[in-house]
Length: 127
Image (cartoon, rainbow, N blue to C red):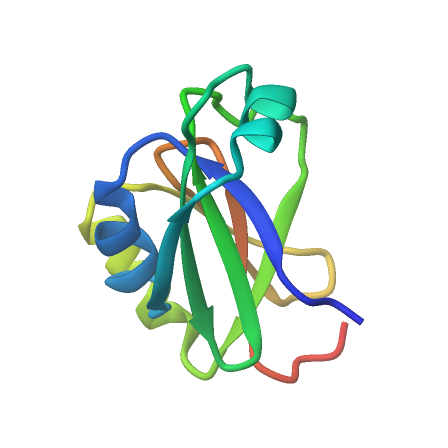
């Protein structure tokens, strides 16, 4: 069972600008990683983490200087009206990609300012 997802972000401003305003997550907490974890994984003594939630999905947004550049690792999120989320991201200046798949369905992707890729899908769409 999935408990949460942890991803890197490069600016605390993105918590509100992207994760709250575009994707609709709620900020439910913030804290600093234990120093031994911060040193082991990030070679840093103090790493701030923002915890956000939407429905039953929780994410830990780990504030680092590391940019995500791992090929096509991504997170797929479902929305009732995905076109609204896509337009919010486009209006806010985020990189967005939209195309028609071979199946005739619309594919939408948003990249946040830290390089994290989000696939924006229709809720309950089985493909």
